[in-house]
Length: 161
Image (tube, rainbow, N blue to C red; front, top):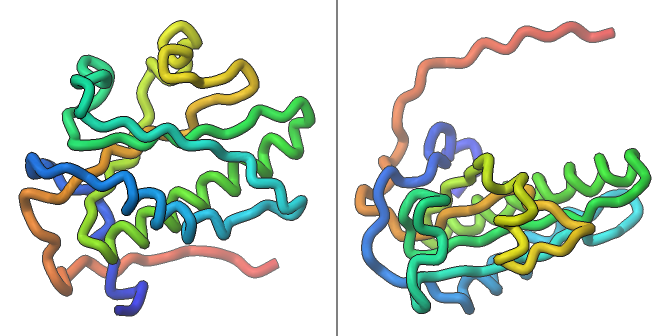
């Protein structure tokens, strides 16, 4: 598989099957996805995995999914480090999405208002020096990805300085 073959194919599925997502699979994917350090070789992330074994703890906060991965980023006091760390976490998320796609695991990357409310995030164990970068909704798609979908050609406009 070539990455260029994935054009338009990385959106998460609109519906998930009622099929559990293995925590072991998520750990395996994360072990590969973390190759996204910043220039200080810091690994400014932490993950919280939540599935529906203990009830739907995300009910009312997120769309329904078999599992969720909260991706946390440490909040450095130094703004430069904070920006580097967030960029590294974004790269990690993209790595994870590519690796999950390879395993036919759908990923919807979401941002919601509740993520910025400490009274809501502390119930998940988010520390005071962390914030949620994204919540990944995980599951196997009810509708399979289409192979080689034709997309309109994108026109990029840029100038070389």
